[in-house]
Length: 236
Length: 255
Image (cartoon, rainbow over all chains, first blue to last red; front, side, top):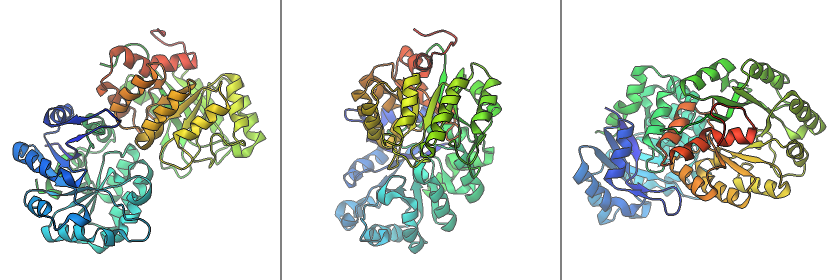
C-alpha cells in the first residue's frame, strides 16, 4: 500500500490558485497510485474541518492537526486529540530569544502524553532549519518527530545528521529533490526512517513519487519509504 | 501528453563536485536523456572555473564533442578571478560554448555586483544567455537578477530553478518586469507554478530544466506532464523556447 504521509486539504501556490476538497486530492493521489494519505493541518483553525474529513474519508485519510502552543488547553484541541493521528504541520516561530523546546513545550508535552507524532516543517530560512531543532528532539526522546521536507533543498544534509543522532526522528521526502541525497539518507540512516510525502496541493504526488522511483533504491527500501513506515509511525 | 517537438533540458551538469557528493558523466546523462525522451541538454561543469578543477572546461568540451547536437556546453566561471575569468569565457565562446552559467552561491558573488558585470558584459556582447542559479540563499534571490537585468538590458538571462519553491512567485514578477528574463523550471517543485508563469509571461519565456544530478530528469518531466497546460504550451516549455534561445537545429524545428 502506497501512503502519502504529507498532504493538505486545501491550498494554492499563488494568489487566486486554490485546490480544495476530496475530488482534487483523490485524483492527484490516484495519479501516483497512492491508496491512503495523511492530511496535515496548516492552521489551528483547521481542526474542525479535519475531524469532518476523517469522519467522511477515514478509510483513506488520516489527520494531523496543527496546534499552537497557546491553544493546547482549549476545548477544540482537547476534543480533537481523541480522533487525530498526530500533530502538524508545525512551523517553529520562536524567535532568537527562546529555545524551540521552551516555545513549543505545551505541544511537546501534549504529544508525549498522548503518544502522538509531530510533523515539523523544515527547510526555509530562520527557525525551520533542522539543526535548530536538535535541542528539542534531544529533550523529548519519547516523542516521534517527522522532519517534513527533509530540510528541503537547503538543509537536507543537516536533516540527515539530526535523524542519525536522534532515533526518534524521521524524514519525510517532499522537497528532497536530489536522488543522490535520498540514497545517502537510506545508506546512512536506513530506509525504515524515511516516509514518502508530496505536500499536495502545493506540490504533486506523481512528481514526488517519481523522485523516489528514480533514486535507484532496492524494492524493499522503496516499500518501506512508500508506505510501510507511515503505517507504523502514524499507527494507520 | 507532453506536446510535440524537441525536448531540451536547459540545466544539467557534468563532472564531480569538490567533495564528490554529486557527479555525472556524459554517458550517464545521455542514458537518462534516452530514458526520459530528451533530445538535447545544456551542460555546465559541476565546479567553477578557475577553481579546484582547472581542466573542467576542457573535459566538458571533450564530452560534448562526443555527442554533437545532444550536449550543449556552457562555461561556468568565477568572476572573483578577474581577468583570468574574462579571458577564459572569451576563449570558450570561441570554442563554441553556447552560454554562461553563473552560481552566486559557489562564487560568493551578487550577480549585479560591479565586479561581476564585466563577465556578464562579455555574454551580452556575444549574444549568449547566462543561466543564473537562484533559490533560498542570500545571494540567490530573483530580485537580484532583476538588478542585473536593469544594468545590462540586452543580456539574455535565464533564472535557474525559477527561484525554487520559496521564491518562485517573485521570480515570475521579476520576469514580468524584464522581457530579457526567462525562467528555468528545475527544483521548483510545483507544477501549478508553471501555469502561473505561462499565464503571466506568455508561452515563450519558460524553459524546461532538471539540474541533474541535483535532481533527476524523470520527476522534472513528470512535473510538466501533470501541469494543466495545453499541448502547444508544453511544446514551447519543453523545447521550442530553448531551441530558439540557443539557435539550435533540432528535430521538428521551431514554430
